[in-house]
Image 1: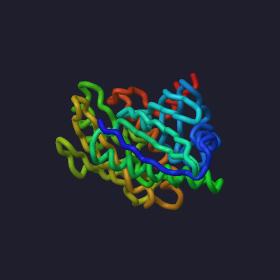
Image 2 (image 1 turned 180 degrees about the vertical axis):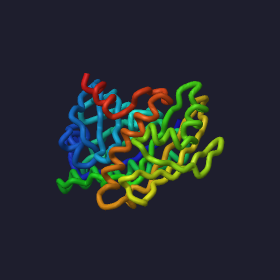
Image 3 (image 1 turned 135 degrees about the vertical axis):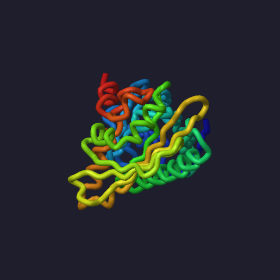
Image 4 (image 1 turned 90 degrees about the vertical axis):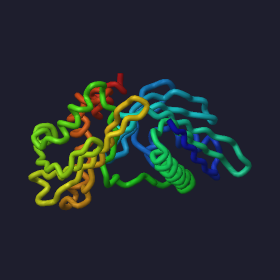
Length: 261
């Protein structure tokens, strides 16, 4: 797996930067919503568009380093993220290290993403404003497939009846079904005539089977329906895929229950 690094010089003292990395009300201004972020404790961070990070705080040294181990949307690869701070004459040198990317392409996307997040963090600190992302237009997640379940998953995703039964009554047309790729068009009665589009790629990395899901087209739905349905379909998808996942029930509700224990 790969480790990515991003860094930013922030014109604010270490103490203030630490607060923005660890206090829920300040994290909410630039990254995500959480009700609890404390040493050696479960953590659930919600981005507001249905996506979430679920895991545990694994390192906590005030003003120096804070680390988490988590999964995006509660399923797929596990990532270790560490924020470290160095006091400088003109403020704080903030560095983030994220270990867990499975490919060079994913690592590059993560590097760009963290650079953007650090920029938003800096702006929020210096200007005391909310710099959170708007909702993400594509629903993207990775599923680590349970041993012996890959063929069953491919069969399900190639069967329009599975979509209707498992994805809240949608209708699906399979556009292409290959060994490493499935393409489908997905519609729902209350979406009108506007379709959404699904792409699932299959890869085996270090003996583990992964399914990479991209469900797009949400902004094209009527009015504000796109944002609402995109948010809702995170849980719809995770519930539908729980029988195929090494993580079992990785829905937001299941993760939230675990995080509050």
